[in-house]
Image (cartoon, rainbow, N blue to C red; front, side, top):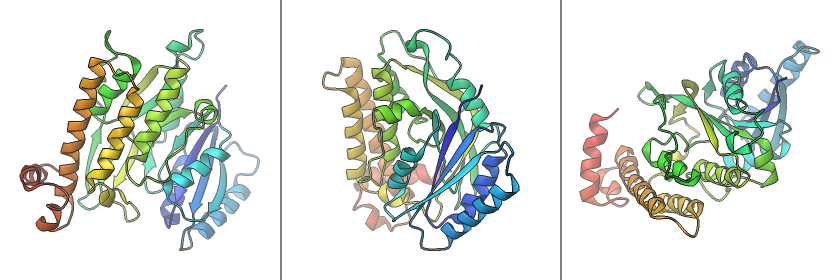
Length: 322
């Protein structure tokens, strides 16, 4: 018997795109879904559109087995606050986060559920899965350039690696764990350990949430991660409501994110852990320089965020890398 999945969708002035997303989710091959739509104090007619859509949807599909739609509203305080409200309202055994201007494949939840429950009947919790992760269809809105990412096979945990070291290695090698949107989480871990999004952050809050979640999953011995090497989540980068571009210009934000990795590693990091942390720090340095180079600011303004000697090679890389 299938378990309920709670799908949390934050909305801020994106009512029309949210309805398109909801329509796509209702066509999912996995039907036991609870759609929790949280309007984060939209200043346009998004909330009215969502409520009317939900009303008509309820009338049209009354008595039929279709995903349930629940609409909530709150004062504007950012996507993390909206997601946290969604978590508090979720009643499913599993939780998924989808941004209102993104989309999913119709088999996304069917395949994600199959993977996260693959070892559910085993007695040992050490063999059960904490997380399911899918590949991503990535589109840059401004250039219309699209590509599939995270389809390469993941090198498994090595004999000398702890679970945390394995996670740190994945974080610096390809980044498929950074976001929360291409994943399926266990609600009991989130709720028991009160894993929430840091509402003070405007950068890398997703990564902090994933690290916190996996830290607690490790504590209760759920130490498997299932990877689906298919682009089942459709991510749109550079949408009008996105604030990632601006927040990525500050090295202080990247450094704060790096501190989350140090906290995840613990007070007594091994030699291997320190090696992985160093690699993450270097990747963060490079990623920061590339983010600044990719911005639309003048060269002079870019130099206020990163040194001239780092910016020049970053500009060259960005120029030839789509």
